[in-house]
Amino acid sequence: EVQLVQSGGEVKKAGESLKISCKCSGYRFGTYWIGWVRQMPGKGLELMGIIFPGDSDTRYSPSFQGQVTISADRSISTAYLQWSSLKASDSAMYYCARRGFSGSKWFDPWGQGTLVTVSS
Amino acid sequence: QSALTQPASVSGSPGQSITISCSGTSSDIGNYNYVSWYQQHPGKAPKLMIYDVTNRPSGVSARFSGSKSGNTASLTISGLQAEDEADYYCSSYTSSNILEVFGTGTKVTVL
Figure: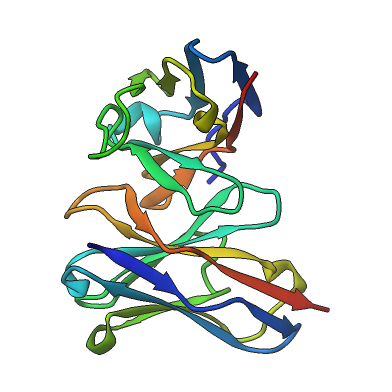
């Protein structure tokens, strides 16, 4: 069974750094794209970017380019999303999700989400 | 890249059929058959319901179907049931940033 298990919720202060994780199991980690999706409180889904762990090819949506860093560690089948300096506006639920087979543009399955709360 | 446009809410009685629209442009829905739909219950992660416009993943009820015409995609739920009450999001590949863009989301209420 394919599973994506995310790290626990975080409470941080503005200006602090943060790295959240997405542990993948049940398939060959290096052969599927992983995406990160933001959902701000009461709002919709926003694709932040994707990474192909096989060669670390990473692509960011324009709104998130330069704001976050997506990475992956093939040795432990884990993808990461990190911030160097959090802002209050980064408070949101963050989901990781696996893209389908090669060339597909949909996500399934999804992680359970990581809630990030940033105080100003 | 702007989000795809969906109605904020759609409602129906049990057993009825409802359709949720998703409006895009020739840079996304109109030019690619990469439309997908996700269901999200409160406090839960999204779940894939339809991919590549019309395909249902294994385990998704046949009551859910997808279609596309021009720059607009649609999700139809037939035989509406109480458990269908949730938020629904469309998504499409877009050539604007070589990634997918999500719709604004639609809250489905079962009366």
